[in-house]
Image 1: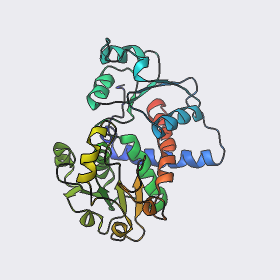
Image 2: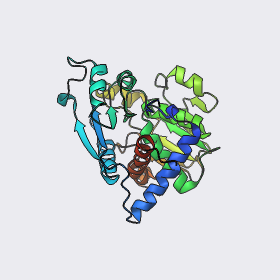
Image 3: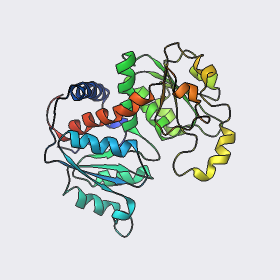
Image 4: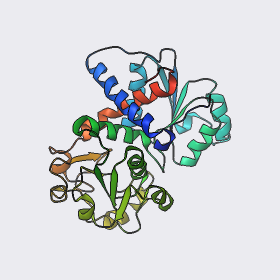
Amino acid sequence: MKTRHFLTLLDLTADELKRLIKRAVDIKAAYKRGEAYTPLKHKTMAMIFEKSSTRTRVSFEAGMAQLGGASLFLSPQDTHLDRGEPVEDTAKVMSRMVDVIVIRANNHDMVERFAAHSRVPVINALTDRHHPCQLLADIQTYMEQRGDIAGRTAAWIGDGNNVCHSWMQAACRFGFHLNIAHPKGYGPDAALFKTCREHVTLTEDPARAVEGADIVVTDTWASMGQENEKAERLKAFDGFRVDSALMQQAKKDAAFMHCLPAYRGHEVTAEVIDGPQSVVWDEAENRLHAQKALLEFLLTDKPK
């Protein structure tokens, strides 16, 4: 059987993703009831992180422990990955020793190369191109609090970055529409937009994007690796801040989402992220449960 990987949302079918989200909700409920569920006893997860992390690392390590498995963390200085040893060789060796490999990488190409030579599932924990695990938590959060996301409208305000790319793919897989408002020159990848255009609309007007939206989403204006562009980006993104006035143009019960970390006063005001429409803390918690469902999906043969 061919090894399944999770490098983008498109690696799973729409039906598989919907079942995975439902499974995440069930796993979360059982955990809240105090029920032990350890299907991954004697399984080991290796984590290779080229970028720093808070939520991603904690949620994967805690999730693997709660499922009965073990994990080990490798920072860039802990391996020979692409520093004297090709990615392909590292993949061949590590996949003979562990059961799943989670990678947070600078370049998406590296994760693809690694997966191509791995005997075990590889999970993308963030690259410069995609952040699919974040979207599992985002969709779970919306469905828990508002119901089915199919047919809804989401508004992305800000940079056409890796998280934005995963929101575009989510729109295709889950059947909702995504309005993206971005400053000129900061839109999403053109080729990806072309494949998703039936579900995505681009604009440079935040008010137009959020009009009638069920979800309003934003992210930091300068992602990791873009620190030297911060001053330029602050100027370019002026007018793309999610504040109360902008939220009022969305639906009254619109949910506000942010993958965190957030910079109050920049991409979002404190009154929005800390206000009643914000679901960011549930969204962050759901990284734990969505990823447990993903690990279960990739590492067990149990029908879901």
